[in-house]
Length: 200
Image (cartoon, rainbow, N blue to C red; front, side):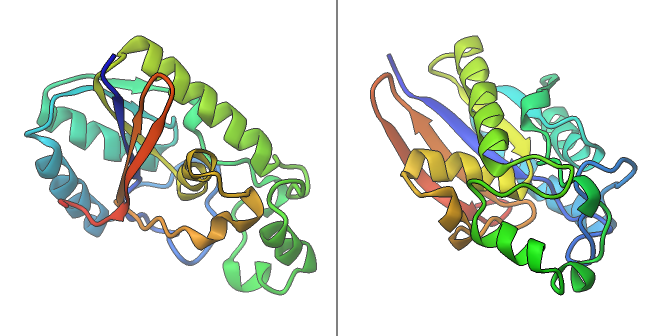
């Protein structure tokens, strides 16, 4: 069987980017810059035989996915397993406040076992994201699939397929509107690209 190719795309720029931890809180829409980024993303994919555009249910990912899907002339599939990690009590906090917290620093050093207060471990998030990828592969085996999700979820997926421990996954950079390319074979995997800029 041919490989199933996944284009792992982080949502485009939105209002809280770099300022606060949006997490799963609702109402965060793309900025004008983000909308420009989605246009470039869509144009870069228009020549590819994309079978599915799947997305996390949050607004910033759905807007990114919908712009791509409109340009490709296909529907968007909402996949709950692709949602952002649950940051619990940290959701909505500014990064300048989080950086002073010892438990935030520990969380970022030991992602495999430490959860945010009232939140989800990275290991649990990785597991559900992998389940989502498997479901999408079963739905369109051997096809090309766009997955629109969040930086930590994409890092967790790449870490799994690269054999990188979750405690080291912060070494991966996943910028807004970036694209990483993963090919899954029956008994093998290839990571063809990581953190490509929009349009690449």
